[in-house]
Length: 122
Image (cartoon, rainbow, N blue to C red; front, side):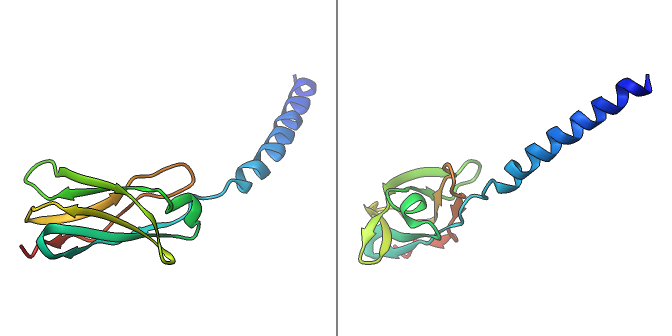
């Protein structure tokens, strides 16, 4: 029995040694930061920042939510685009009031982020 166990343990050890460097080499998703601001009359905008901007900020879908009792309401979305040297998103005039936040969902290689909640000054 012992003679069969030693080769099995050795084979298991070799498989683990080969598999671990691949797992250690896997990269963590890049951080993403979403900001939110309000302009006059319910225009919401903000920026998407990342250490990998071409992958995680350029054309990244941002969704605007209104805080509600129960499930928050999805009210608008936009894809971030390069504006100067930053990636900007904007909803245009929503005409809405209340408390709002923006969200970038997780995509391959990029973390999700939620902006702080702001109150519309309408």
